[in-house]
Length: 400
Ligand SMILES: Cc1ncc(COP(=O)(O)O)c(C=O)c1O
Image 1 (cartoon, rainbow, N blue to C red):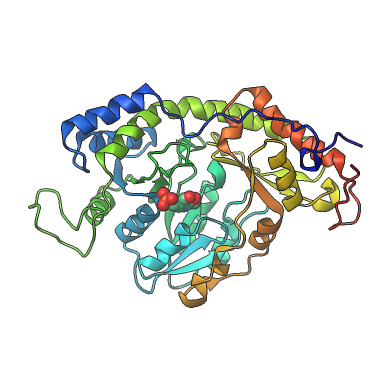
Image 2 (spheres, rainbow, N blue to C red):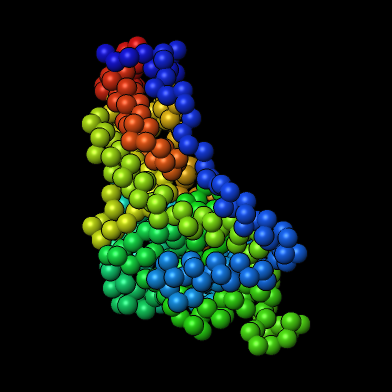
């Protein structure tokens, strides 16, 4: 019998909050002030081009095109890659809606494909099976900042003649065999939304090594303008998706901190995953080639029979113990009401269905403190396990 759980009136493991996120200090303030004083607050402030250059360099890419957020970044990337009406694009069934809705918004058809049970990333084998005559591209998501097997994806894509688009919204600074996320597919996108590993509240960027693709992306994100032509000359049906000078100012400062923050999260993330002893807790496993993980979130599945209580009860108990966490997306993307009406194709996705019911995530702030702060997550999981008797599945009877 374990200690009384906080959810049942016991003493919580933690009363101190985890470090605040996002992190900002005098550096963001200094750069923001410079933009305010410049009277050039829009996308033509020099910080925007400077940030693009710095981000591209850090991600082993020749080109980067900034934009308003990570959702429109995917639309811009698809457009720049020549994907449009009638084309099919393979997407993981388990992701944020933008991975699929961007495909629909350019007039193409998302094909939902299952993920791996251990990796939580799209399964290259399922991609191979799903690719057909009309399939032009695959969007891979490096879920939680853990890259998928990009060598295998490249093989499958070469066989099926698919463009590889990396939705790297979770994976700034992550690496596959020493190569940065965003540099392996033909084109990639990142998000700078508030919870991401570097942020300006909102923001996005497209990276590529293809100069022509980059020029099309820049034009599409900038009202159809082309470099070297007049301000009021528009060459394609496009719109204004530009990033502001304020966003670029904050992002320049955030980029300076990223490598050190990733090192800390990697250290604490590995410690967390190695320290949990309770049976029935299965953390996301990245393939060997994932040499740097950005640890945007920590994901784990709960086997109710082995652990003693199901995912939902565990999440509630952990929150009461002072550990921030949340269940996975409620259902695979194709079950969103919009996909009742919007054309799509869904392959069988038993793993995506399963993880929506048994998995949860911890936000990055749980890895941004000391080793002891991270070990509180372990203590809380062990405490919940000790408090429940692993008996019949579905009952999870508390002994306290
Ligand atoms: C995998 C994935 N792709 C795309 C996005 C969209 O990014 P944004 O919120 O910046 O539009 C998100 C946002 O959470 C995401 O998780």
